[in-house]
Length: 105
Image (cartoon, rainbow, N blue to C red; front, side, top):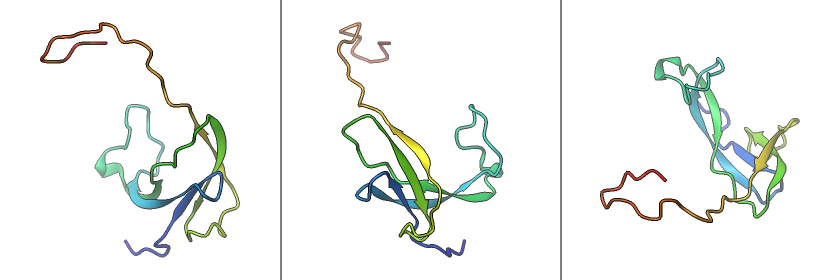
């Protein structure tokens, strides 16, 4: 694939929350819930995948911008991205399991 825009970026809200984006093969048609990434034969397009979102210390909604040029001069619209608080585990039951594992908690 010839890359016209070799350095795409994603911005999560503020200017300091910018990550790289990578071109990946994907399907043009929407996938069903049971097809997470689709079958390889169905991946006939190219999409952008943002690298892992930068961490946020609080639960919040931010605007997600994707830029092909990497400087965000080419963006007009944004999508909402939701940050959640990290989960907290207060107890596990059962407290013990067999040494070979596979104990359902």
